[in-house]
Length: 312
Image (cartoon, rainbow, N blue to C red; front, side, top):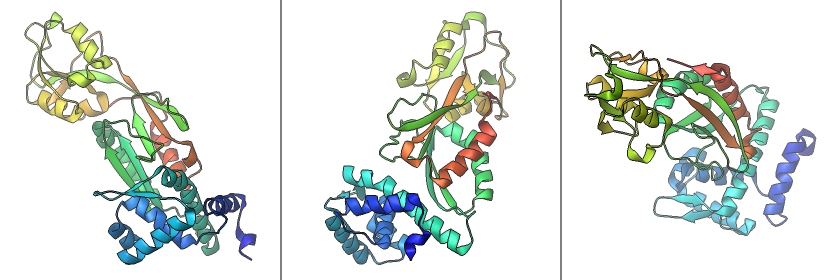
């Protein structure tokens, strides 16, 4: 009777998990437990999410792994980390979850409702000044989808599900990653309000720039060419910190226009040779390309940023 409700994708998910379990069909409740532990990282947090006790969660997980014939998690002092086998099973289990939730919504007449968690990663300033208003709009449309935004300069691994969707200035070359150029962002040179324009060549000029690990970035190289006689006053890999130091008179700074134009204590320096802008790319693992909540978020993001340039 249930098969009459299942579509082709649901049947494929069930057959995959049937194969993974050594020919035994699994209980959907066990899949939920696996997903909760993968997302929360500890038995206690996962137990609270699904409404079970921690000992029960532990017993169900052990039985699930025994049936699968693989250890799906590595137990560490910090919590539960997916093994290679667990990472392989995770996207399939998530698709199974989406299909089961879709079936429940269809039977309940709630096809348009989306829920679940999406984990995003981007740089600090991009999350604050670009993504935050977009995510607020997304929440208004899909209030049951929980977005986790992690601001990090590290290139998080999409294959290991460190993030579901990543925004970064470096193109994606990893296998199995779907990516696209999202937007070109203009950069500008900024100085504190009330100061004069910098001297040609940089005599007497102080700079606030990226730390040495990012010394090869285009804006750093532009500063070195534009002001070869300037002095580096301070360095930081955080654009918000650079903007704050500039506002306090420490030195000139090259900043993304969406950040610099919003700061009330600094001004854009009008010079003929403007600093180079940067392209921003988005990427996600190909296994998530049909995940409804991810597709809904991409529609909202592209609706706001699917343009050629972004200024303040």
